[in-house]
Image (cartoon, rainbow, N blue to C red; front, side, top):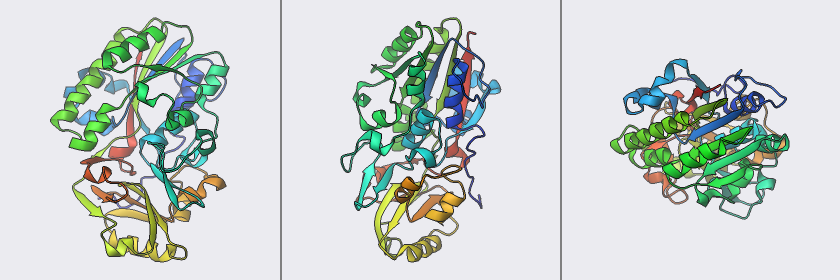
Length: 373
């Protein structure tokens, strides 16, 4: 059993490193921490939920991706290991403590309300106010690159897209065939940087669990999609396949709202089931911290806001203006526990697969490469 937190290795093979390195490989000034070689065009295939350990465990269902594993490397997602945080780390090239997307649902300081960063719901929010940092896509576009994001039309114009993908030219494509065709068409342009997103692997994993028949069918779709893009790469191109996080299947669920010792003194439960931000009533933070530590002993890391920040959970620094978004208490399971809150996070409480924590199954993501350079 894990006995201490596996703090994500920011700056040593993380998603911010990947975004900065991709720009450098395309000729922009700046660091190239991953040492990616020069390319005329790049395609980043972002597969939601494709953890490195999950792929390795089911390589037979993804023979093309598995053929790339011997020369692949492993990155870390960052904390929490969740889509909104990872997409923003990738999109800005900075750590969560700097860009402020510190969890799935976060307190809006001074309002007594939670904001859902994925659904962009809970209260009105300007994406530029919530996440003001310049994106790598804005930098790339200003330098003359053709920066394209290929994804379903439903995400175009969303708050999350506005927060993390500012600067892209959005190319809506629904089916797998549409996305592959659009990617290959966009890669015909010189100095193109194309990102293509696939989210159904994660969605199925949440509902049925990873490793199930339904999940393996989605993995096979991802594998075929990657193979088709690779086969159509024009000369001078590089394809990189990565993810935003991995996943675990919950063997135990704990309803924090129905557990008296966890509910006492709590104003709001944010975050998500594997990375819970606990916002205490005024004056109750110390009592809540003690209660959560005792109740979750042997199952979760439970720390105060200050301890999480000082330990580098959100990166080497957290901007002062984002501190109020972090829970007074942060509870992060390291067993296969999900801390649910059914009244405020109803659908999440029904899941089988979860992510968010600092376990290797959730943190480690692959970086697979195919090149025609």
